[in-house]
Length: 95
Image 1 (cartoon, one colour):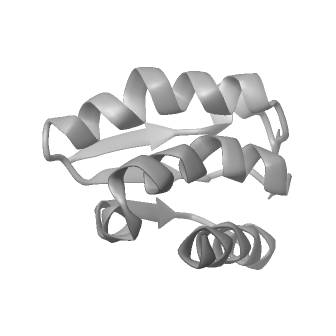
Image 2 (cartoon, helix red, strand yellow):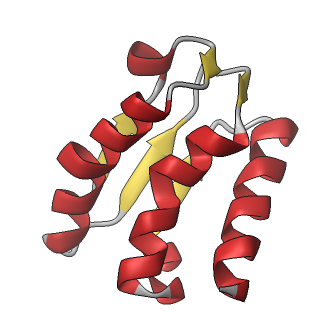
Image 3 (cartoon, one colour):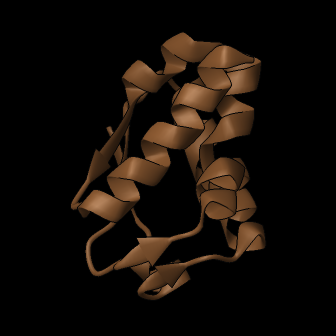
């Protein structure tokens, strides 16, 4: 299991797509390739843009298939962030 705290990289508003891309490439993908469950910890993150969440997880879902979301877990998400994650994952399921 790999737990990734987002706040140190994003601050309380996760909006930078370049940060999301770096996290995806350098931390999330390698952990998933090692068959680990990845926990994205949103502690202290008040909000995020849809483009940040999209940059964080959509490419993984596109390349690995929708089943990969079983190994992506989210922690300390407020309702706003939960809704954004649902929007992105639902959108990826439709593609």
